[in-house]
Image 1 (tube, one colour):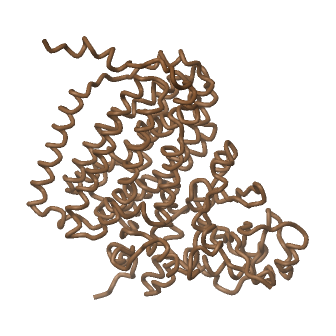
Image 2: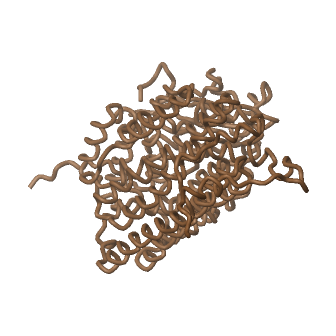
Image 3: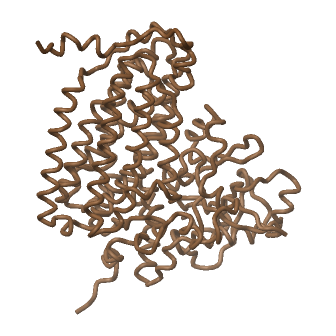
Length: 494
Length: 94
């Protein structure tokens, strides 16, 4: 007789053994488990918030896969991709290049949970997380592979993380830190709780809605399917937080505060420009700030407060950054567009500008002034003045331009000498992150450090592009060939 | 004389930049190297030539002082932050 799941589930999820040939500390070193300072018996309280067996998992995932594939096949035959707005397509280039290999890195993180997590219940769930992340990587690769024949930028889905493209270095640096270099407990707090439970909603729910509105049903469907997995395995973070709040709440607070700031800055780069500038105006659902307020401020942070955590000490800075940080990253990426593997949309035609003013009342004074000079140069046919002559100075924690958390009125010096080397930070918050664990960040060389250290030759834009792996076929340029700037030309008289 | 990398921010621009200067540069020369990367690109050029001030840790450095002079007085490491702004008495707010 086949047993019902309830008859064997408790045993299967909590199967452990007493080690006799090796010390527990050698088999589960705290440098990997993260269990230091937490009594072994405390992990008995770790309870997964959802029940899943391998049999159920395979059945459900098979149904999801069939759904994604059916949509993809039908749309591929209809040739819908070729009809999409090119500015929207840029958002999918950025997403695929910036996140596909993060999914692959997450396989390694989940496999660490499988092996080193301090309770067998968590190790059991790690198996499903690992299979989820393998699926996400393969979905992205399949989606992109099918589009290669019409758009070679999708080659960067696989290629990006094997290059030194500087935006990708920033993404990679963050996930190296919180996935590959983190113990299980920290990875659960920083990745499962902060990135997956909090911020992937921005990337996978908001962008999915925009993609659907833009007619990109295939990508929207893929994003939504991935999010169903993320929403499930992200919950591994909550029981871990519960245990840590009982035994080491200060560590939990610091780990989450660091991860929250770094996630904010990263998603201001990955998602903010796509939502507020690349998505065609009539297809936008919410502004990036509105989405962050609903999903991060109202939802995610409220849940964390329920566990006894305080808001991050830099909350006011974070709220101010929601008004500005992604506008800085957008202007920066557009101005340094030859260094991108996608074609950004400036997104500042008169109609788009009106929308930006409505959503962000300080936009004109903070950002419009800078765009006005760019628009003047475009319309004067002085495109060379809209292209970079040098690099922006970069933060040694986020790898993003200094000052880019706020507006041009907020830019301020945050530098610190550590062991004889001068480190620069985009904000006081990033400097605080560094100071929590200087050795963690101190050895890394930003793109600027590599440039002045002579690793990039010749030491000019051409050498920089060579070092980044940017080739002429994918090099970024304005996606509409500056047509939007004609809005600002004096009206022609008949 | 030697090339030296600084972090140069023209006040009013949104991002400080990597700027290659020379240790023999005066502050006026250093300011010009920073300003040319912002003015006419993201901020408008002034209507007529306008001198600049250079600030190090919030203090104005005399315009004829060279970077080497500053280095003789205090430690200046690669990527030290310098602010450049229009000279206060003669300028326009950006």
